[in-house]
Length: 239
Image (cartoon, rainbow, N blue to C red; front, side, top):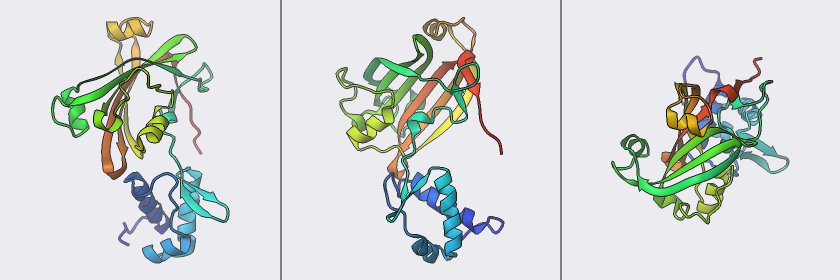
């Protein structure tokens, strides 16, 4: 097993397992090779493997089933929206967001979106627009583009899209979400967005860009979420 000389062996094992999960080689519910098997395959001690797995269990990438082995956890990408930042109350505690879907249709994708999804310019994509509310106050607008052939029928109004959309996509279309690349920025609200979020034009927004992948490193969704900065908070634990 090749590895950087300054990287502890247990970190190398962690990286090996993360790479297998992120690539889709191992998906949620898969049984991870046993500690002796991994030790032999990677040329390290069982103690090194155990330490790596312990760390990944703490990160909730893996979980142990007593007497049965170690399995890949389902990463809850639906709830990973802003991993360190969240919409919250004045104390920074997260609040429940309910989403409605006012628009969905098959349409030609913008050039940038098509490029990110590996599709030809002007390819027909499924466009979904959702609005997130805290009680009755709109706080975010979520626009997403999906490769339409992978989620056939989702454009129909009679198909319910729940708040936790990825769970439904995985169950209905056998399309597991294995990782997302996210970028968080800020911008000023244009007139249209300000009107829909009941804020003043030019008010600050937080902007999340997300590229979502399924197995075999296939990009399946590009998402752009704009939200009110006045309901945005940062809360974490440093130790």
